[in-house]
Length: 586
Image (cartoon, rainbow, N blue to C red; front, side):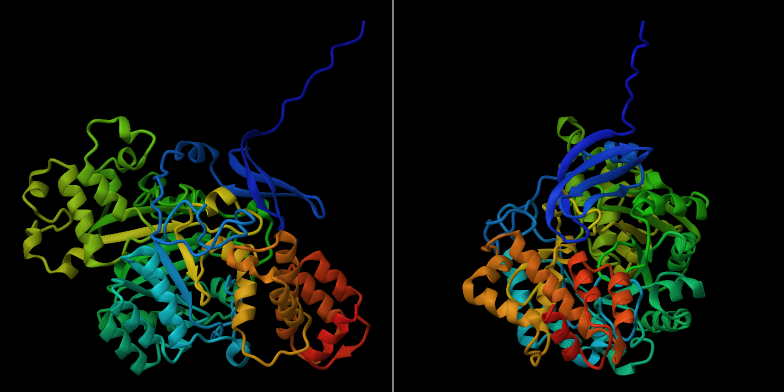
């Protein structure tokens, strides 16, 4: 008698199927989302490059509990492209997109005064002469596109490169404000603000909000992420100067495992103590453009950051204090607001059951949901929430007044002020000083890209040709490479990328970038040629073949490009054109 054959259970639960990208060639492929070992893992297979896995969320239980934090999308007033090849190849925005734009970004230049090892914009000092720089007319047109799509847009962020290097940055800020955009941000490393009095005077006059790169205090942190150990003093000087000018700041920290996760508590505590700082934004590091080498299965995600924050602040802020933002997919962005009274902080989620209101699978069946309170909370828990503004602070206090029966709240008294002075007797800045926001935003990369998430993205890049492209699609699919190449200064004749682009425009294939293209393969081929062109331009010459091969491998270029580099003749190359000609001959 033979023994029965024992069946083996799988080690994961198949939760859903979606579409993603091959991290090597960027073609669109099928993907599966699995719950395994307490984490959420994406599994996918490219027919050319094989199987890939990556952690997309560090807590499978939390992942399944927040599904209801998914607000029905709001249509924009106008779409920019048509549906032709399907998401994510028709950006955008195309009519299949499920959400309007809460926050728009404009990269005004590609040059930077740092060469950060971690940089999704792939900017640097080497682009000071060869990079792009938008004109006033281009920015004017891009802002008009935003206004036409939104009607009454609320938030625009000027970024780069390093936007403070652009000689017309202040003009751009004023232009956006004249177009009725009430909340204008500048995403900066703070170096010029720390030193340039004229720039600071302009910022003080226009009062944009400053989105300040601030990854931590340790020299190792700044060396690993920004390439320099000596940045802290410069950033502290920038903050003190901004405080003296009464300009409000949000600290922005890219968080990388084994680099600066241990500093999240200190960053928040510092922010609470500094007069210029009204919030902190944590961004788990993602693998787009330049990034540190890391195992996709040990990728840091929002739950990792928030648990570290809870531990390092001794419970002053806890994971349970944070609620997903429902205008995008619930795994993308978690937020809390805290009432600040001297050394005391109270997250408002400990006063109001925010989850009750922002769980859209539950709250429509509950008679006690207040439409007024829901409207206020939807404004606060949105990517367009104006962090550090008087309006946001007033909304927090209004939410508490509407959502609680506290006598002081009902009387219109400040819920954070020890003196219990009525709100009517506070200045707007006094009210705002009593509110502190902490935000964690997780962006996708080619390893973790999920079409479902990108279809509801509410953070878009504005580009000069009139498109509005979702953040993660722009950085992962190949749009960044294409747009950057189109903006680079003239004078690059003879490259394979230029020739391919011209040929594609001539026969109609290039319009894939405008939503009416001829398929993913054309996009992939053009994308690879643009990446190869930028790779060649970014090398230091003269250079020998062995160094070129190593650089291509280090940059995680596609296997097609790496194969071409490996076939180069074994000699030194004195300039980019010489290397380009050698690659064209292969």
